[in-house]
Length: 362
Ligand SMILES: Cc1cc2nc3c(=O)[nH]c(=O)nc-3n(C[C@H](O)[C@H](O)[C@H](O)COP(=O)(O)O)c2cc1C
Image (cartoon, rainbow, N blue to C red; front, side, top):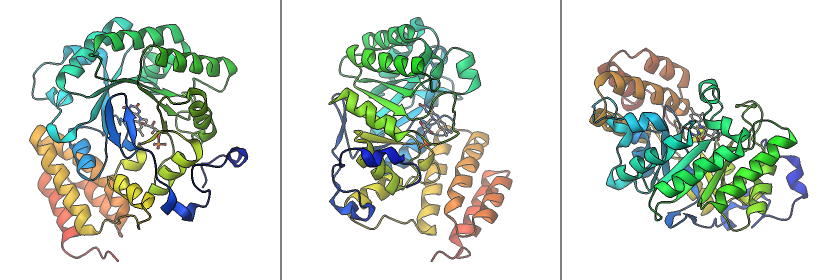
């Protein structure tokens, strides 16, 4: 368990057992976000560039109890027109409920109207991004930048909470601070406590700092501390969950109410079912090539319902490259998908690598 910090060994015994082989006796509590019942507490994160409507539908059909759309900038949401190229950002369909939308921005004034628009589009939860570490976000005073200014962050929370109907929960996504300083830590807790006081239904905490980006581990000790600090309030943990086992490890070792799967869901939409299997003491589902091809075809079909050929190809090339990590000839398959210049060429790779019997599975 590379990503569990050794200090955890000093903490009180977890819910069930520290023995990782004893997963069978671990029954996670169902997750609720305000009035929204989620169920099994392992959900799909907001993933910019990935968690579009097709990816969310695939995750849902394969067992994700809750997904969040890609982060949207508040002003972009306000400017969205009913144009073919962008209207998919507001697409919510019956089978994907409950589904969350996520907002990022700089000015408190823009958040309320943008949140209203997302609620009207049919999203069940509105999440506020105080975590994004990318240069364009932080440089534009968005995302993780707000962790350095609790007053503005909390003003944003208030605006969003007031803007959307009371039955739609508002949540916040935070990294554990801007950096490792005590000031940053104090600000984190001021925002955390203030957000709950202002009515948020839950907070997702990524155990890395903004400065850290993706270098080094997510600090699960910190997640455990946050959960102990807030008591009954809902905390969802994020960072370094790549397998069913690590999802259960995070629940067990930190006590958080839910786990947000990010990179671990890209190319492995079965991770939700696998985690449910493991928690129930079953062998985690292992998709054979036929199943992998079925899901890739399903996702392509969903893309073609909302995107033109160029965007469908770009999207499915990106996802298929990630799926190819599960293929026995992963490198050849990755290269072949990357070289596909049309949907027909992409389908030819799928047929040759997955459906012709060429890729030996077992
Ligand atoms: C490609 C990519 C896109 C992401 N997009 C978002 C996003 O839109 N909103 C968000 O809150 N976090 C986003 N994240 C952060 C993840 O939700 C998550 O907090 C982070 O990846 C840590 O989890 P992991 O180590 O299990 O991947 C993104 C991460 C990646 C890798």
